[in-house]
Image (cartoon, rainbow, N blue to C red; front, side, top):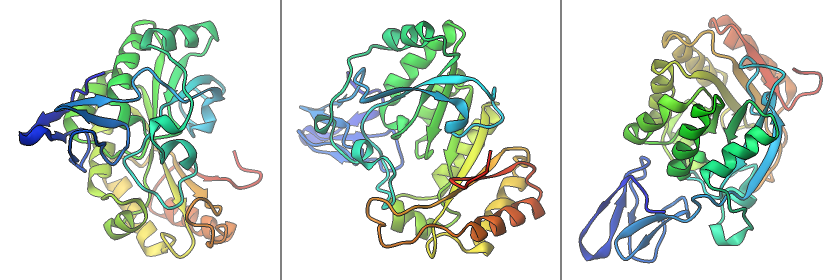
Length: 291
């Protein structure tokens, strides 16, 4: 499937214009996401209609706590991600080439019909970074809306505004992973930048998409309470005080095996700060006895 967001250049190279990386891709090579490949000057999505993961999940797992709680969604993922998070929880499918894992062959119509067959009220594009297979998401989401299904995005939000604008009319809800409130930490841990993520959040707010935010708190990485307070201030100042904020507990994973789990007391401090700054709905994730 030819990609929609790219520019052809001299010498057979292409410039991907889907996300802020703006990858310059030579013939036969892929961008950072590993799933968009240059074939003789044509950028192709290697994962279109080839999801590697399918499941029926409670909507709370996304996590979405205030968007139709108690319902289910058909979760779907293709390989690829435009971040390089050292703590990636799904690195087996997000940090690999499409050829490294098995996949199903499911057209957008197939996905919608599967959702209807299992009586799920919505589809969640999740587990990896769905924005890297934007064409598949948009085509599926458009059909889903025609059938009265919800479209839910679980994302790190690293995308350019033009492609995002093409998706927003069909998007009902999103959980956005706000990894920290420091561009330096974004670069160090995820190989990306903060400001495009904030732009995505604001664009979804303006499009009346239901938003919930997740902040994974990693010891000695992004657990500075002053920074967390700055993040919460930004949320409130941008008319997002009613957006649920999930502080999630870190556990050793992938390339961060040497970092201990987040103390629950750290999450409690973050929760206290969020409430002090005016955020109305705060939840702790990966913690016993939580919602």
